[in-house]
Amino acid sequence: MERKIGTYTINGQTIEYSITGKGEIPILVMHGGHSNCYEEFGYAPLMKRGCTIITPSRAGYGSTSKKIGESLSAACEIYVKLLNYLGIGKVHLLSISAGGPSGIYFASHYPERVKTLTLQSAITKEWYRPKDKIYQMAQILFHPYLERMTWKLTSSMSNCFPKFMFKQLASSFSNLPYKKIKEKMLESDMEEIRRMNNRQRSGHGFLIDLSQTKEITAKDLHAITCPTLIIHSRHDGVVSLEHAHYAHQEIPDTRLCVLDTWGHLIWLGKASEDADVKFAEFLIYYARSDK
Image (cartoon, rainbow, N blue to C red; front, side, top):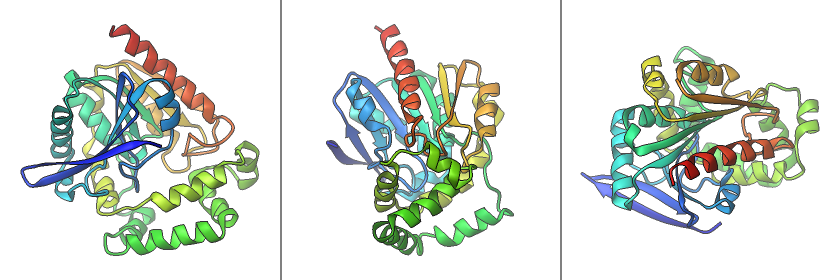
């Protein structure tokens, strides 16, 4: 996948970004947790449909300064300055998983820069809390001083034992029993999970994500004025379907698409094409309406 990687520094803070594709439809991606500007899930279909995909590594991920993540307000201010630097006006905003709060805040506070908002498997309200066991485990496994070891072990295990690791991880991404996951998966899913585990890192970013989910309020969702598409799997085991229904209820102009993919990674499995088609139809409709 051909992409350009760059960095932009302002007031001593650096943001890393990638530009993928050379189409006429600009998409700004708020990637999910443990990811960065090298994300690629769902990108190929968008490039075929004439999109240019701008993906900043969010605060604390990749080479982006963690200081940018002091608040969603501070982070989104930098995203606006990055768009200005790149000479891009309005964008179609895509927010994925833990990138949900960033996208919601951006769309609600910078409506003049957003044509549409799409939430994919996205967190739309407070997620895990400090008292939750998963939150406490994440503070250890994805601590900036330990996350490199966590991902090195995960990638090594995935490369050596892909079937075993797929079974373990697929069950954490889905609320279905593994027997049902197997019925809904594609042969390529195992390799996609292996590749994902080889490109993921947490840096300071994931702990920043955990702290920022509580910054989003109903007021932010009410303030979103652009057309919004919400895509979520009914079998998501990471971000419950409740987040999608909540956003659908609170954002004024929304369309909700509930998929039958096997879990959180809606780009995988037999029903994954539905996600690509729904998103493409939504984008193309509003891209044409601008002309």
